[in-house]
Length: 337
Image (cartoon, rainbow, N blue to C red; front, side, top):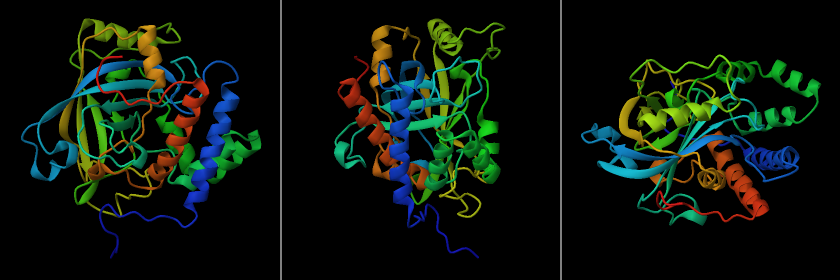
């Protein structure tokens, strides 16, 4: 019989040193990867587009789902950034994890981050795989250490961390259109008396797009341009509640929460407007945006070691690259840029 409670965190005593080491390694990595030009993100540097959207909280959702942002029906303006995960900018045909970073605006209430507690934004970060690659900050740090080391270091890491290799292999996929991918938070978040994971599930009304026979390096962006020129794109935003603290762990996002145990349930609609988004000005705006799961209301506080690492790493990288690029760190308040 378990003594664990729902939404219960267990912080390893030496976690902080791995998080600090990870932040320093990733900072060194982007310096090495960007010897000229602007300083880019350590992950998701290749943006397909940043687009205007509405985040529409559903009416009449079940009582246990009426938490924080979802307490009452409301429509928020949002910016959504679509990207490839790899730290290098490669052709879109390469196998990769794809990202969808959602920034709601006009969200009242004090937020978690002390330095940005009065901001009116709330972020959700979801990716194209339902499990995170590593289980915790230490394993994540070890993986980055191997990636920036010798061939032997990489081989040894994956020989001794077989599940990381398997999760990474499964997550590296080719896609036809970022607007037609299902995305997952992979990491858990506080949600009332329990925890939850998030998913953005696309509406695909017609035949899904296919990967072009001779794809351009940026064919994912071109697919988005085409779809949003012809009409809007819709996603269901859904939550999966933690119902078993052992089978659905908080401290290991590399372990799937089975949908058979707890299905995802819709709480909002994401409506990406019909629009043209491919201007240089909008690309620059998307480059300068910062996202973190810690841009959030306390009711949706990120949980687990990977999210605790993100709190430190995302801020450190964002501060460094904005200072290097001589661009202000500003949270947007509207669709005006």
